[in-house]
Image 1 (cartoon, one colour):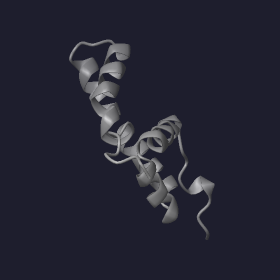
Image 2: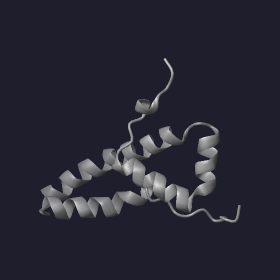
Image 3: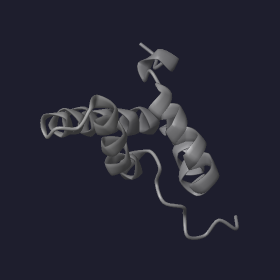
Amino acid sequence: MNATKTAFPISAYGLMAEKHWREFRPKMVRELEETSRLEEALYEAQERTLDELLPLEDKLVADGLTMDQASRQAWEMVRERYILLPPEDDQED
């Protein structure tokens, strides 16, 4: 069976990653596209984010935060690991 668009369902986190990566990591995106791995990488980024985010939210709620506070704080702690990657050093080409 051939891989299709549904092979890696992309959520809002994946779309956010793609937008951010295209702006701040264009070389990385180009390399992923050239190897047909962009969709897979976006899916992996969103899944890893959720894998860390959800248990962290639960812990923060258990520590006494409201769900809204826990969600915001967990997002701030996790977002730069997989979604909002730092800019590439060299963006000239």
